[in-house]
Length: 188
Image (cartoon, rainbow, N blue to C red; front, side, top):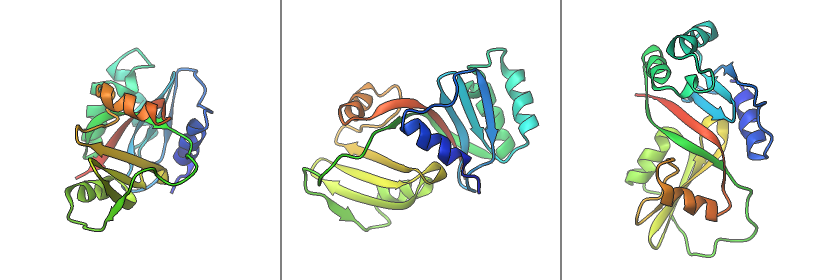
């Protein structure tokens, strides 16, 4: 298992980003479940167990714009076809430092593995725990390369989809700052 993806994600969370040099880093998958693309400012990381030569050749074939190629729909479609995986969306990747103290609201842990939010979360994360509060849910689990991920679901769903401005503002108000984007490829 490669921990290079974990190191890159941890560094980005601290504000230490890959060099903005227009390059693409191709790394092995950090685990069987996780493959995809992480895009930072002028630097992209493709993490897949596919042949790096195939990745680079396919990137060059989809567009001459090296900065856009890894998140280009043509490349992502080719990568999905090659790996037999699918992708739901391109998500905004954010990070925030832990806040001190206990939560200011009462949380009830959900242990029901058949709860729709729990069932969805375990497809993408390990060590999943879900808490309910009046008006929503909080999901915590380990995602790509074992990094802690949080999802917050409120009555009017807040996601980190770049087009969900309300969700993005909610996370920013809670101290999260954009560090990149992520296209996660999942196996059926």
